[in-house]
Image (cartoon, rainbow, N blue to C red; front, side):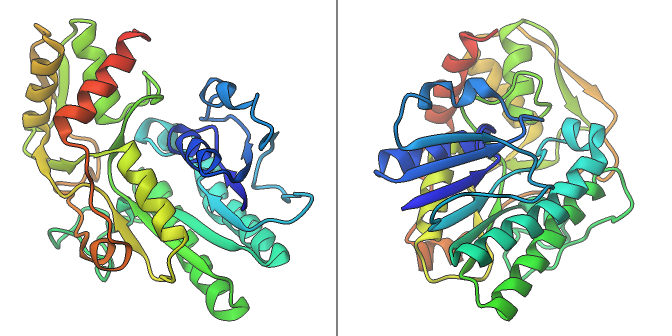
Length: 309
């Protein structure tokens, strides 16, 4: 296949580029490098089946030749990014998704949208399954990301219904692994960086809020299965093992052998109290479950971070 991946120089995008290249596919990576990094794809540029186009997908997207699938992963994805870049986040979720869908329509290709567990907001249902509509504050500081992705899902389904495009929507829960940015602001890079540097580990609130962490290789496997499936409804992909943030901080301290202390700071506005995917749909239709344990995944991730700190 010839596959276009927007946001292909980002954390998840670069792993997807690798995945499809290993499958023997041709990959066109489109990224404006706003939050992605050229270093994430530097090792792929020697591949004859890989092409990089530096481009902002909120502008018209032009790709020569045939395209079999478009994976739309362009977007700031950490709280630090989308609070700093609120308008860009909204534009890539709306204009960027519209442009990517327009390309799918023109090329008669499959389309897969990277959505997020954040569309569930601060959920009143636990664990979260795809039929839950969410509890989102549309005007809060996190709302720019939540609503950008909710709009992206809505326009994706509209193109599916009106233009008969074979669309997929993956709702991604917390994912971690190598090539995350040190200053990403999300739980894993923040805690690992602080632990490796011997700095205090910052836990927001009382640390009782929960998250579920999926290793990036498992996520990419689930995404590739979804792309080739007949499913058009949203599918949660994540690891249903749930940890409190305080528990997770202690795991990081143990695995890094750090002497870091845990300190507590004020909880950010609209920070979700719980987050755990119901993955029954992925199990049933994709025959997918995560394989990498939290210990194994974190050991691999910590090893990679040690070379960067």
